[in-house]
Amino acid sequence: MKNFNPTIELEKRIGNQIYEALQGEVVEELMRKTNVSSDDVYMRSRMEGNCLKVQQDLLPDFYHLCHEVKHKLDFDEAVDFYITGDAEINAYSISGEGGKPHIVNLNSGLFNIMNQDELRFVVGHELGHIINRDSKLKHLINFVFPSDDSQHISLRYKIRLHDQLAELVADRYGYLATGNQNTCITAFYKMSSGLDLEKMDVSIDTLLANNNRALDFFIHDNGMSIYEHPVNPIRVQSLNLFATATSEDELNKGMDELIGILLRGGASEIDEYISRFIVSAGVIVASQNKDHINDDEYKEIIDTLAGWQIFPREYLDDVVNSGDIYDTFDQTVEKILDIDPSKREGLMEYMIDIVMSDKKITHDEVKTLYKIGDYLDYSEQEVAQAIAHSIQTKFVPSLESIC
Image (cartoon, rainbow, N blue to C red; front, side, top):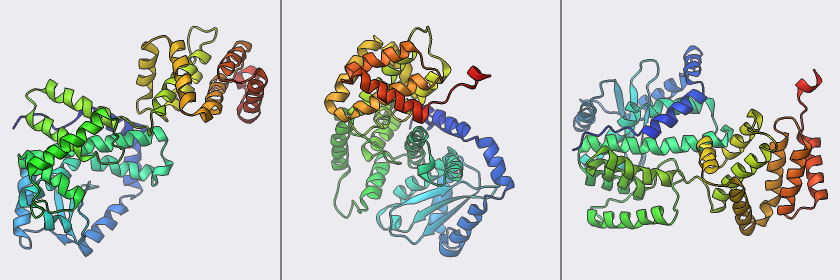
């Protein structure tokens, strides 16, 4: 077994960004002082009252399995293991608060279809979430955003990407707990299908062949993995790379291709064109008769782009540096209107928003809007009406101009 570090650099980077954005250090201190950890008391009460705690005198074999995995992963913090009577094929972990033991729970349905080695993988996977501090970050996110709907769309994308990468990291811990790649693969498919694969006479070779076929779809046919857990083809290939790569470079190169799939956040081909339009149109409008884009205009471009790209600043730089910004604008407008002509009004509105973002409206900017409007098949009167409407509904004069 190679001695690769199970962490993924991008997962750590995004996790730190989310933590800082949510003011993690301050909020966690407030949570402790205001006894928000009562959720922890509620959860432990439920586990102690309605679940079976794994203890040496009660479930000695599984108790030893759990602690053997814990020792193998060199994790010495206290963990309480539970089994819940639930047919759903699932497991979860909860980070302990205030020095209390962490919690790892396995639903009873897992014991009906998994062998001992596969259970080791599941336990190792859940301990991996605790070791990697995913459970702690999730607790912070759930406190700040009790509902996903309250998250800014850009932050929601980042949280989703972090969740997916964290699953791949936890898979690596599960592999380290077993040392058997095939065991991990059968565990993946048993959890996703709910089937006892041995009973169904499904071989590992058949599973791998099916996985390779599915992976080819995600790599070459723009398949997307847009849920909290990565799709199985990505998880299997990620673990295969971790288990068989001969160098860090080989591992990272293979992971870059898989992470590229996870970065596909949009739902259709038009999304990439809209992203490129946001950059090119924003830069063109904001840079009229100026040698740089001011902070307000830059923020407007980034905030809009954040609804379409997980790393909006990096994406903006890539588009600006990739070629002539006017050519990019021409090409993206043509593509967008060819795919969905109804987007025309939204494109015009965005450019007007850029003009007004610095609380100033110049004659040169209005002339540029007329030119772009003509490109979008708007008359000058229609552009003027659109600008006037935005002034009446959105424009806020700069206080500096009247002080």
